[in-house]
Image 1 (cartoon, rainbow, N blue to C red):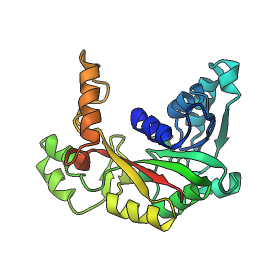
Image 2: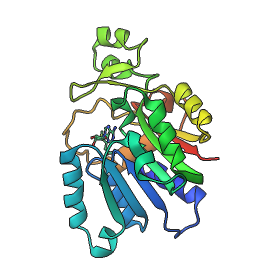
Image 3: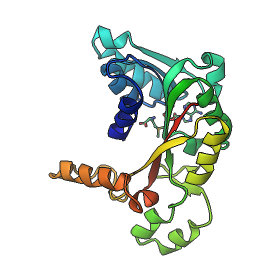
Length: 233
Ligand SMILES: C[S@@+](CC[C@H](N)C(=O)[O-])C[C@H]1O[C@@H](n2cnc3c(N)ncnc32)[C@H](O)[C@@H]1O
């Protein structure tokens, strides 16, 4: 995923340009910190008190030059219009968040609004076109059958959440003037690996296979997650 993001960033912006990045639903800040370490100016938004505390803690462990490039805002990703001016970011990330939002369109529209013209919007969502894969590959046939005609699912934390279909999210991106520019599958082969499973010895090969599948039809279409990249017109 990080490689896909870096590929999109390097394809759009001159090498070495310090980008203004917004990471909505940043969690513990893994991606935000990685981008700050690369030299970008990063703002993270997170609503959960414990998550933002963990992100703050992680920032304090960074050298000063990186710390001063990171700004954290506790708040709801649906309120970007309250915190930020239109067009004030070059890159906006929203990874692993839309599943928790009942009505994704207003949130995504808000993200597009704070993007500068030519800016990159990177969304990571649960793939609503392939929800039967996880139960099906785990031998849960009833679960697989039930998953065909819905975008609702129960995640690994036991929460009832929702997935997004590629065509409908692409239509949303069209409607908010940030049309789909590229998309990838994420977790094509590894979705059914148990949480906390030991890291395989041949991790590099596994990652190469995932990377290849994530950008190749028809494999990417049945990935657990979709990485959609829109570009603000
Ligand atoms: C699955 S985690 C993903 C974290 C990070 N973006 C990543 O990719 O590793 C989802 C995060 O989104 C946050 N979140 C969910 N809904 C949100 C909202 N409406 N506004 C801000 N953060 C939200 C959650 O608190 C959680 O930290």
